[in-house]
Length: 184
Ligand SMILES: C[S@@+](CC[C@H](N)C(=O)[O-])C[C@H]1O[C@@H](n2cnc3c(N)ncnc32)[C@H](O)[C@@H]1O
Image (cartoon, rainbow, N blue to C red; front, top):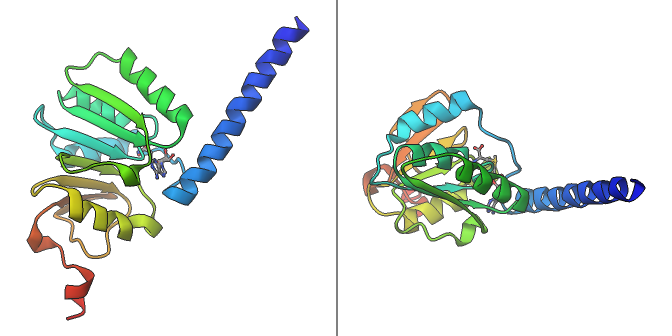
């Protein structure tokens, strides 16, 4: 009996250590885990207008709820997450939820994600990395791609629509002024 208790405690300790290390890594490489509330998620989904034609990406996808909701609308949804425990949780949730589309979370740094085929991107990143994210999204996304950011805005990219804390951006040349153009 004591062995069972010790084993359970050891497993819990290992999970806590993994979570602490992953959280520190997340803070250094992007943003800590702060889940978007359901109310705010629904507003972001309303702005995204997802269809079954969409390839949705969530950069820092947490528990995967945006991916599942996107797959419910028939889309293919891919999440990038660096916390392995959240990756397991998100993929488990995806397996347990029947959806017409498919959702999958990858254990991968979002900075190495290829966004060239994404038509919708969800973000809840923190202010300090919005400049670098803006550069990556502007470089890699196809024209017409929608980006929905919770709370945080980009320095040079003008949102097409804002509802509460949800900002919708659409990739096209006219609503983005590169930093060089700004200073001309
Ligand atoms: C603010 S939370 C948002 C979670 C989820 N998207 C939501 O809105 O509920 C940010 C997430 O990004 C993850 N993250 C931080 N840096 C990352 C990186 N470089 N690559 C992938 N995921 C990252 C964190 O582990 C965390 O789960």
